[in-house]
Amino acid sequence: MIKMYGMVKTIRNSVVGQYPSCHITNRLEERRAKSRALRQERRRKPDKPDDFVTYEDSGSDEETPQQQEEILNTSYNICDFVRSRENNLFERRSYNFEQTTRYVLTHDMLRETQINLGYVNKVFCSKWLSNRQVVFGTKCNKLLIYDVNMRRVDAIPTLSANRVNHPEVQGGLHSIEINTSRSYLATGARNSADIAVYRLPTLDPVCVGENGHRDLIMGMCWLDDQFLVSGSKDSRLALWRINEDYMDFPDGGKESCPTFATINPLSIRDCRTAQRIRSLCFNKEFREIAALSLNGYIHIFNAETFKQKLSRKLPNCQDNVSIAYHSDGLYAIGCRSYTILLDTRTLQTIKKITSRYSGCGIRATSFEGNLLTVGTGLGMLLFYDIRAGKYLESSVNAARTVTLKCSKGIVYPEDEMDGFNVKYVPAIYTHCYDSTGMRLFAAGGPLPATLVAIISLTRYNMKRNARKVPVYTFGNEIGQQSFE
Image 1: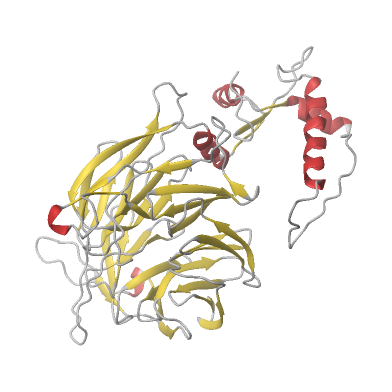
Image 2 (image 1 turned 180 degrees about the vertical axis):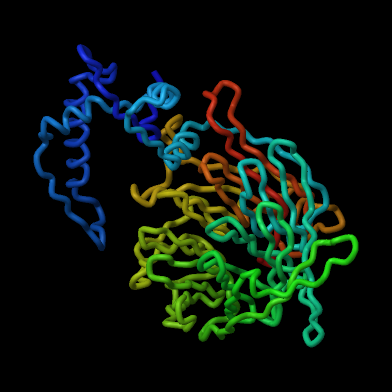
């Protein structure tokens, strides 16, 4: 019997004259025993009292007869789930992708496979386009697509516009964002101070946005299917509207070459108190844009009026480079030695998550359900359970936490620095989950900004002796630092 509690759930119907195979009365007593043990653990007085405590009404241990019947008829057996789905039975079924991710991680069911990509400079951003394609951007202004199944890399031409009055900025592609309907992909243009928008799934060029920034674009976020916000090292935010009905497309000529329009921002706002915008995210619940600046401030803009509401100094925050939003009302901010969880309503610090490895530096953060995934400067991915308030623990070895670690990369000899070996531990600057939460792509490289590495993609596949479940993919690439 394959039981993956929380991953699949099937409420089976009783057949006349017999109960389903999961209908075992001892399950009720086991359930009560676990509930009592959990309450005792919560009541145990901690060595250090928490600053914020919640209390739950324990109620009665006894469920109603109807609840007991539903509990006994509920199966967590994946075979029952598959059989019910294949036979199209009239049974209630549910599937939790987040729990699937947890199961694969905690049971150590992944292995690493490297794929060499050659001389390509550092990868800063990435997104899954489909269940087999990942798009990522590099410091050398290349937009590349990696086919997981074919192990092939294709280059997408970057877009350029004629900027007569401003010098061209070259700093790489630092952000890739896809709108909610997955019809447009936004990233940087050939001029790193401009934005470029592509149509999905064909990746045909749509437009280039110019005259919005004077310096490198570091972050973007979609407000809806049309409106996009970009943030730059010039400490400004620009609002763009992506609507092809209002764009003028030039004639492609006799060969009908793909053409794209040129647009200007609807509005530009200086971010007061900010020194270099580093990352952006959109709070859907409060309709707010959160911007993170390198001088240790978080800035909140009203998404409807595009006006700055407030700025708050982060506590003891150094080298803060990434911000992520969780729908439960949390911002996760990656800093030099820990990750800060902020309340989106008050911007008060809820928790400081100290890194398990000193001096690693937090380079990338993201939420997948209730799992906070952290990419570090030491080439490791850490997983923090925000509900349990601790790092995800391994089910294979209870003495350690779940960690994915990249293999060492190679730096070209002519790019070596004093004290920096040819082989290096790549920092992880970007990572992303696919739509199922079952595959993870990550990218990184050497921290020093002047180094260029031989890029290699790393895939984590199922081990041969493991059960067959969807494949996780994990990628590591080149790096950066002075530090970037």
